[in-house]
Image (cartoon, rainbow, N blue to C red; front, top):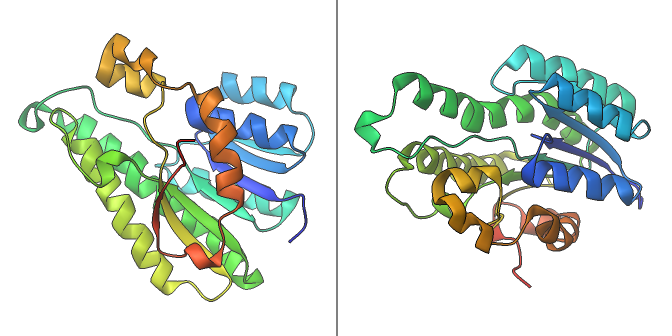
Length: 230
């Protein structure tokens, strides 16, 4: 595989997605990224005017994903690495008091969004018989905690979806569910409050995570992995 890769990342406006996007761009890779904020997308386009295909996309909307994917595939071809990162978390609450609209929105982004992105990018990867799909999971996709049942449910779904996808892929490709670990992001602050500051920042995390993702290959297909802690 060429040293320069086409890397697709969803949810690049902040947190882990933003850190990965900036890190990989600095390494010289071609990046396709999306987020829901038009202002952030414009800012990223100005900061990274070359080797970047950015789209204002709500991954819960299949048509929006399709338009962005078509642009990215035309610009850079099939992705070598596809990272389904976009996700939201519910406000801390017991399950029976979670608003129906909030639960539905979370599932639409965290689960259906992964499906939409796979649907529009993976056929090109299959045609080329090469590439890695990383679906960002969570420790709460393998265990549970109170107050975040909808988020846990969505990440358990990502784990199952990834394993099933892995069984369907032809040789040369891989689908991997990855727990990024506990990182200080706005999402973590919504759960942990000020305690979130005791965990590593996304900028510190990316130094470990970025090379880990690039090292994934067909031998990892179907595995549930964790980003190394050291």
